[in-house]
Length: 418
Ligand SMILES: [Cu+2]
Image (cartoon, rainbow, N blue to C red; front, side, top):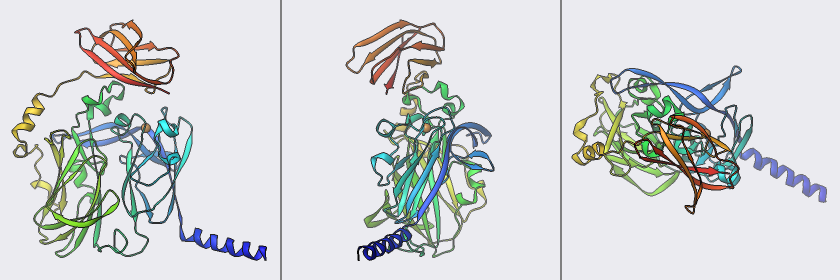
């Protein structure tokens, strides 16, 4: 009798397992990528990037953003990350309901160090739009390109984006991000995050003419079609999505959850980390475009814009210069008053027994203080722009390294000792 019950239980378990398929993805974290971008003067520049790649024919290939992770609601997802690069990385699954062991936040669950590999596991509990990114010194690793999107479909074969939701005719995914070309050009000289000033605005990792050449960044449809647009902001600036009068845009989901009441809008503001699903009915199929503005997060001043063409394969209508009519006087004032902070980079961070300090000005003195403000040590600098200093065997915790420039300015960097 017990054997019979056991057999029945095993059959039930196997049916349940079959009902929840396993999705397996394998990515590699890389620090040696390269991507082409278009400058404001409409020339193409190739910049170094970091990011997630995959193995193809025995070699690792990498793009920014990394590969999109797709699953159906109810699936189990295993996301393996191998790290052949020289620094620790992780994958943080932003917005997904994961347990702490699979959250990829290094001070809780550790780093995936050089030569190591780890499989993040989660259950796709809700249809929706989610993000993934490296959580090691996030302001640097994410800004250099270590991010991608996770799209969870409802567990049915209909053209809906959440269970029992409205149907769409075409769907598009727009991962919005930004990039400071100076940071990517030479990551050893990245200073305080205050110095981050993005000058490239990306839709699925591409901008301007390179973006229009990518068919997934250009929308098409006939009058009456419902276009599903998924917008995900993984950048460090605010996005303002401006819909043309040729569509009626209705916002249905926010951050992977269905809104109690969908709302119609011509403008949608998306803060860093937020995601929205918008169903837009084409009212007029003549050529138009959705404009995405990038705004400063503090005063919402205008920084730049990109376009998503709709039924529009002639891109000559799109201006290459920034549209100054969108820049109000407050924004201009903010720009001109912007403080220029010299690059000051301490590397690696989390710190070891010694660190390399790089700056774009000569330094004359270093002071290390702990969180209580007590001085741990003080030493003269070598009046060089790149130098190594020995910190010794410090106990775990947060420290602040201050350096004085030859002109008397104080530069600081927060250091973590694990
Ligand atoms: Cu990383």
